[in-house]
Amino acid sequence: MSIHPSDPFATPEEQRSPVRRLRGRLPAAVTLWTANPRVGLTVSSMIVADGDPGRVLGLVDEESDLWAALEASGRFAVTLLGEHDRQLADRFAGLMPAPGGLFATGDWEPTDWGPVKPGQTWAGCRLDDSRPYGWSLLVEATIEHIGLTEAGEPLVHERGRYRRR
Image (cartoon, rainbow, N blue to C red; front, top):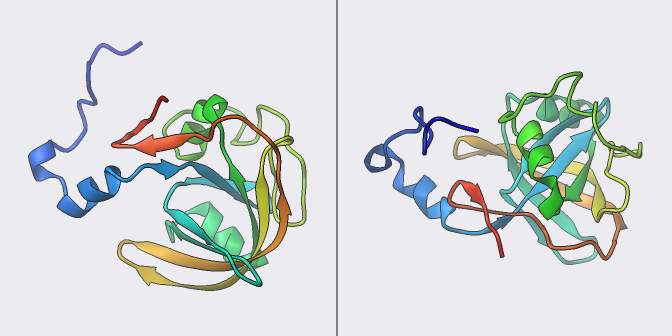
């Protein structure tokens, strides 16, 4: 429960970047990018490009623990999050406390690419390239493995909130 109807630390709307406001109006699927040794980050700025091979492009924080692990291992997993994963997404985004660490709660399946949530759609990716892009790092990767499931509705982020259907 909050005593404020809105975030008291948020930048006033008239002072926010118009580019960031435009991006916020584009609904985006929420994913969890993980790598070994057990690091992860919530990422919604990404696309999947079909082809042979399939590719993943995403924007990550170059100062994140995830980037350090990607750079060292050259591999990562991308898990599509569902409606039931709101707290998980917030925890890996650094918006919610994670007592005991990011992977302390829930079930995790180890893979060669990074830990994944059992029963959820995911892709194992090999890092191909990266470069500064805006205030982020553009990560380009090849999809090496796909685990598809018939899970429920994906978690979608829009205008700073998770969207309800």
